[in-house]
Image 1 (cartoon, rainbow, N blue to C red):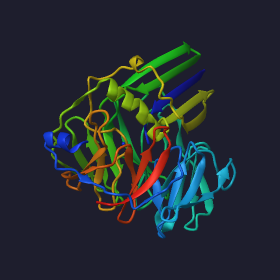
Image 2 (tube, rainbow, N blue to C red):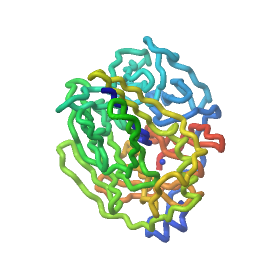
Image 3 (tube, rainbow, N blue to C red):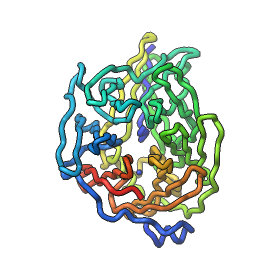
Image 4 (cartoon, helix red, strand yellow):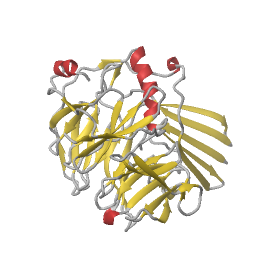
Length: 392
């Protein structure tokens, strides 16, 4: 029997002052001018890793390149090359800091995680698929959405697949300790609504699961000290889960839902290019042997938007990874009417909204450094440019 399971999702695993005022929020803080901007474009940037000397590492999955970038000088060095061997990668998707000045490179195309030394030399690799498919067993795809200061990886579950059961309305936030190889659960999140399509016969069945655009879902992130923040879509509030399992919940944030019209639908289609079309994961099982591939697909923006099932209103916030800055504050990107400038609600460790930050148009937050905020600007052609600002 051969079964193929395909997932298509934006896993990565994103407002104007008058509108915000009408919703009872604080007056937004603006970033001002960028301290530095790199003039060369990338295809897709998901993370930025600031090095001790101020330079940054940038992984571009669709461009198939890993670079060390000096934003002030406007100079970049390419690290490694495309391939399957040592010092090579297929789709370098993200870079995360590890203890001791090391770096973790997520190589989607080769299905592995690669450790870089403090001098950025390529070292040990390991597959990001952990476990197996079968009765009573679970496959874990340790493609990190966050990494804490101890080097533990955080990612979401896909549910138990050995019996053919797929995660539907919820998933677990999982944590992998690379030293002990222990995987544990640190929280549960609501997933976007999905549509399921099945084709083929009983001995060669294909099942495709796709999220419903702009459906409500929880978002989450991780602070350097290992605290997990979950932004709840039910009443829009923030939960912080400590390393001891204790939870602190903030108050609900009042907001006026945005009705989804043609402009909001088109903006959603355009925004898929921000993450390279989302993360696509394909699993094939034949005679108890598993084959897995993962990639960023470069989804087209030319789809017929009427083919999708749409909710009446957009959720309060984007269901994307929540970046957490060095001060332990969670940055949550809001949904507003099409064409408005991006705005982030910034929550402190008690779950209270500390401030509202408005970015210049066509920009999103990707990472933080020492007193720095790294932002990506996307042009009309979908190309992405890295900028650095002072952290508010």
